[in-house]
Length: 248
Ligand SMILES: NC(=O)c1ccc[n+]([C@@H]2O[C@H](COP(=O)([O-])OP(=O)(O)OC[C@H]3O[C@@H](n4cnc5c(N)ncnc54)[C@H](O)[C@@H]3O)[C@@H](O)[C@H]2O)c1
Image (cartoon, rainbow, N blue to C red):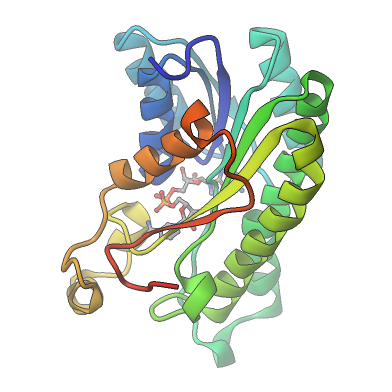
């Protein structure tokens, strides 16, 4: 097992890419904090981890709220005494066209996707500095690089912010031997993309050289690599997981 004795917080892990990541890190021996706005679903993921012989707790958090994030970090330290890994996966999506984006909608997307990533990273980085070790992985999006094809400008702009934040944090964290990296998924089959409907998904799939959407496990394995010792010297990297949709 690659992550024995490690403790990982995975935000937005009640479903989708976060859930697959939480289960995969648990499979490799990490104790998991399944953190999500949806506590009931988070508890179900905790049960799945326990059934497979792992250790996990569920924490209700709105990543856009500083007090929630601070409670999540406190709960983790009190349960497991340390934090080795943070995966910032919580995110929300909207496909509103530019002329229809309300200012409140813009703010909420940025509050969850970008400010949430910042708040969780800042709180966890503070803990990781004390032990001079740790791994942070942020989940951005292919739309951050090419603009939103299906998703809105507010979503893709917030995810572009996640890429830049990753690089800034990687610079600040390197002296403490803390790795900070980012995964940029193209479309993957989750509840988020199911909402786009069959017609859009069929057309988008056709644009991907691999001719299929990724599975949540594809992102989970990329995250596992970045938080493992195999990626010891990799930091500030933006890793595409997109079936060849964009290559840069
Ligand atoms: N699925 C894709 O194709 C795709 C592609 C690129 C990037 N992403 C990104 O990957 C991440 C996961 O996507 P997914 O498809 O699994 O989405 P999803 O909607 O299936 O799951 C997102 C999870 O985040 C939680 N969440 C939402 N707002 C939250 C908040 N304020 N605080 C805490 N938790 C919150 C939800 O309850 C849910 O469990 C997101 O950041 C998304 O933007 C997804």
